[in-house]
Length: 244
Image (cartoon, rainbow, N blue to C red):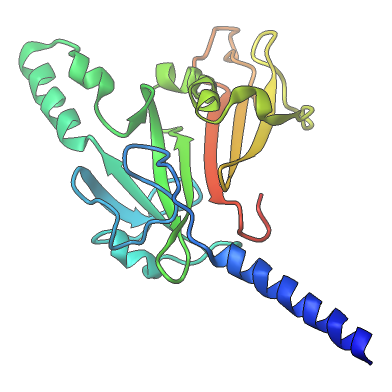
């Protein structure tokens, strides 16, 4: 009887310690500027950020929001997180449009304005739990971008890897799905993951032609932009269940 009591007491202490450890706050380093896991919707900066809306898994914005604090208006995803889409640099883009219209020049500010990371246009969002704590970060290259930007979107991953120690990533190269082909000699459909400083990092990159895309029109002339080119960068609190 005594042995059973001791065993149950030990199991209780171990489970309590595990719960306590999981609930202990972690001071995460920011992924971008001051956007970091672990912050709350009221702590996040709003200066310089605009066009808040509910996110669509890295796609176009949905319902407009007044700010981070409206996260509960966004439907939870499969992980129970609320995605808030945001933009930055729009004023710089509007200014560059004004100067371009007046002087018919492509200015430096035009090249680097807008929601860009490492000079790649991206769709940026944060993912909140029900308590308003940031549990996820997502940046996906924007497939609405001009062809030149889209064509090199898969290269963004090379700017992200060094942030977490590139040699430690576990990468899987997926084989082509039916109908998918390479762009020239290149076919890329890769997913790399790593756990780092309490985070689970997932980087996915594509560069291939989808079924039916040949890069040529019916007359055999080259057609620009017929390919899938993207980088998907996601960071999650590693303590979350069912991580992708």
